[in-house]
Image (cartoon, rainbow, N blue to C red):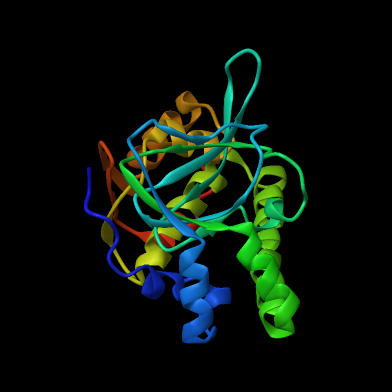
Length: 229
């Protein structure tokens, strides 16, 4: 059992729409906040479970996904540390439309719905920030739909690899480590694992990347961006 998180108020300020709350308000939110831990593969909630608040990932990774009656799974989103999820569905008075599972040992905060509703009632600027955060998430989902609908399988994979470089703020040839398994990444990109492996193989043969498990060397990011397959 890991040690309890020592400074929940400081972590709460990492959530964008909490960042400018007063110390008293942050302390009030902290009283409605509970720590959760997940083991790898442990389910946080199932599709159809009732919603009582939202979550913030302190460390680890959480997979949001849906599954069919046949057992097929589609990964909707992978939540990384210092990101929150579940804010929008919290206000719909509907159950979760996805299930959430830890991809690795994960620590989270659960913030209760009641205190968020109280803050909205008392502070219009807080409400605007919360809406802005949810709008950014919606914009990201629209971009995902565009990518899956208009880009080829190869373009999706290349876009994903270059995104990992952009997140690290580096330029030129470099090594990256995939944040999760290739199977999960394939599902996130709306591909089969076999298709992802074939595209990696093609990029290796083109001299653009080298793959060793989760470690990938990008030899020429600029050339990768223009690769047509």
